[in-house]
Image (cartoon, rainbow, N blue to C red):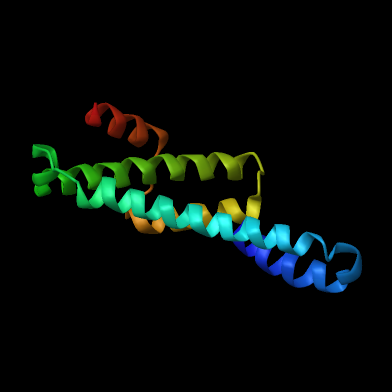
Length: 126
């Protein structure tokens, strides 16, 4: 939104139609300043609340378990995405994209996961 307002509206549109839209420039510049101020405020609030005042719980400190969980999520996601893109290819949805994505997920998983793999991964996780 900031880039659109700054580049396209203030930079391009107003410079082309400078006479008829000259009155909008101060308002749009104030809106842009408000957006910057809000983004800065939200960033500071996030840093304060989520980073500076962060108190870890036991699960956060168990790094090996976090790594295992992360591997499970990746495996489950790869299985579902392989299944999804295979189905997209069968039904001719975005055929060129489906072919490329299917090849990507098959090459990154080391084997060809099926829908059963995705369901098994989900059951194992639960």
